[in-house]
Length: 74
Image (cartoon, helix red, strand yellow):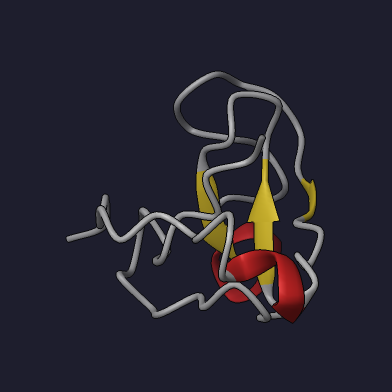
């Protein structure tokens, strides 16, 4: 199950579970769309992989399977 990390690892921008701007690689490194499309040029700086839009967990499932609160950004 995805952790749904709460922030961009590069700029620290908040990325709540319902954010359409969250991007993840296959290791679930999490970045905002602005960083992925801009400075990162679509390549994960941690693993060299590509990014996909993070799926949005339905609200009724978040109560039972909450998103992570551990921040990784600056």
